[in-house]
Length: 86
Image (cartoon, rainbow, N blue to C red; front, side):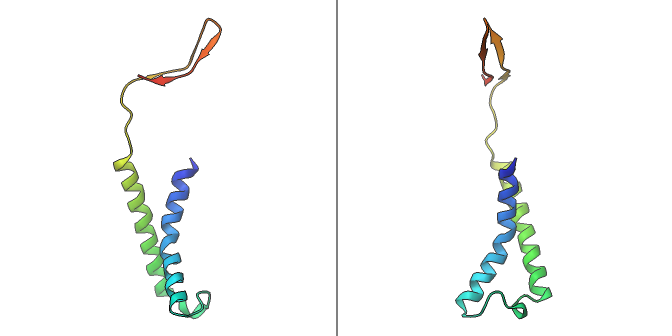
């Protein structure tokens, strides 16, 4: 459950991180408020949403699909037999 949320959050935050690295490489303080104007933040939010959406779509398109039938767990002769896919 947490993995898709963490992946989407990471993809959303990636443009902000890249912009901060860009500012640091240009020898500017990345936490200075004058670098984070409203238009830049809006563009980073749009880029982050696009990256997160692309990640979700890519994960759903390329995820391995189960082949076979699920056999649920059961008790045979007092022993729990785990579920499996056949």
